[in-house]
Amino acid sequence: MIVLVINCGSSSVKYQVIEQDTGSVKTSGLIERVGVDLTYEAALAKVLEDANQFAIAAVGHRVVHGGERFTDATLINSEVIASIYECIRFAPLHNPANLAGIKAAQAVLPNVPHVAVFDTAFHSRMPAHAYSYAIDHQLAASEGIRRYGFHGTSHAYVAQQAASYLEQPLNELRLISLHLGNGASACAIEFGHSVDTSMGMTPLEGLVMGTRAGDIDAGAVVSLINSGKYTAAEVDRILNKESGLKGVSGISQDLREVENAAAEGDERARLAIQLFVYRARKYIGAYAAAMGGLDAVILTGGIGENSSSMRQRILQRFDFLGLKLDEQRNIDARVSASMPVAKVCRDISKVKALAIKTNEELMIARQTAQVVNRHEDKQTPEGIPIAVSARHIHLDAATFKTLFGADATLTPLKDLSQPGQYACNERLTLVGPRNRIENVRILGPLRTKNQIEISRTDEFFLGIDAPVRDSGRTEGSAPITLEGPKGSVSLSEGLICARRHIHMHPDDARRFGVKDNDEVEVAITGGPRDLVFGDVLIRVHPSYRLEMHIDTDEANAAELSNNTDGALVYTGINDASAEIRSRQTDISG
Image (cartoon, rainbow, N blue to C red; front, side, top):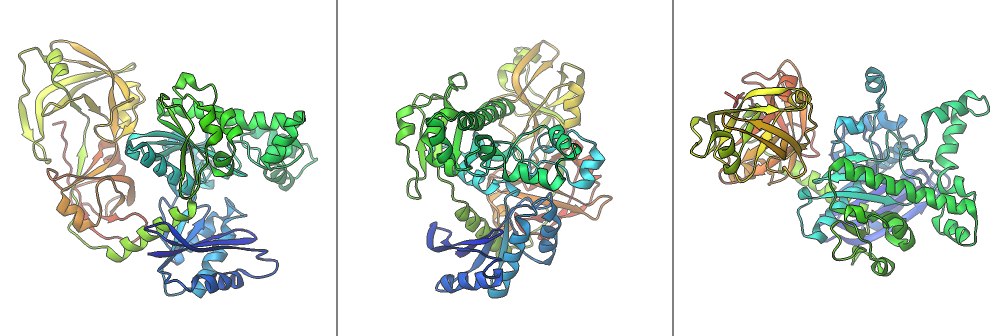
């Protein structure tokens, strides 16, 4: 599929025509002084003059802010356009330009699908404790005050590149991505998902940037306004246009000019660089702690890709994390479209350090093609049963023997819906710092490692912070003590809140048009509450029976009952495509 990728700024239009399968750029260009010398319609007409020599199958539009609604790229319709309008208050410089470009492009290319790809979408599944600010909950909800994050397309692209380079599945890696340029942000990427990012409700928060202050005490902003010397608009201009490298150095927002001045002894320039580096290093340490481990640090964007001196300053003295910088490799590192990844750490470094050339346009083209293909290929297969999974325990043989005795064996109580799995008569007590939960059922057969699945309510009751994880991924998870009739075991890890997922046989996956490790949304409608479960993992295996698993908290939130109807919503597609019936299965007995 050949995709026209359009990025409309406040005064310019950038574009590329990309063959999304190969990544080949057929043509590209930049039209400046839009809004001064020509309209967006005239600019898009010029774009089409260049792009029209190719068979454009779809148009992908970069949209900066998608608010809370858009968790993926989506086909543009009138409802989507209205929602982008609603987000203008969060991105007043960007969203109006994005909308002008969409309307102009639709006018000159009315017969091809147009897709919006949002900077905020990659961060849309951050946990509430990461995206929430500690202010009045009702005020935050009514005004949309929360962390949204930006640079999502770039962070997602370089994470995929890192996984490919390291020859490991993305959903097994904990990464920190630093997009460093005139705009700069950090992102904690745990098992393929953004779990925290430094930019907030707007692109102002977080790292030091070219002209933006990044993190600053809100009290300082209030103080400036209350002084009577500055209006709110003037403070906004100071923080966004006259701060960062430019404001601290008093020289320029261009790092190269600031570094030259620092080398000549300018103290303000040196302070600007130190602030930039310190803030980046602080976020690396914080995100490594938040994820409970780290596999690689990625540096991208204009500074991350090209400045060996800044990479060296940021990455030095992380030996305590297992990151050992190779200074010569770092100096020699060059990244390009043909060689997008360069390792800048030593071979023995436990935590890898990579410079990666980002390619947001290719990512937009790929997401656009995925949305269009799924929209055209969507089917209406049979419904998906929903099973409510109560707290339960999987044990390995050694732990089972310790808890029940050397001669003990599991005794099946009843078969479960998934072939080969069964609920057992044996039960245990979970012991946490605050409370105990008794009579938690073991599921058979025995496994190769221990895993205890609980709900968020259980987690708070026990007094333990259990991560949300795919079933089977217990590395670095929470500790728990198990008590049985013959003894007790204190596990250093194994306690998780299981991520919602759908089991599918390969035949089911073909009918639904999805594959293993895809993510979809499942809408529950027609019951007491209409809602959509996002971030639902598809798990495909020949032994699986079609079924979606959610925990008791989620079932209660949805007020599920038998025969509740819903719809499977494919990534990026807003219309329903499959009827769902719900079936509650209490596997705790």
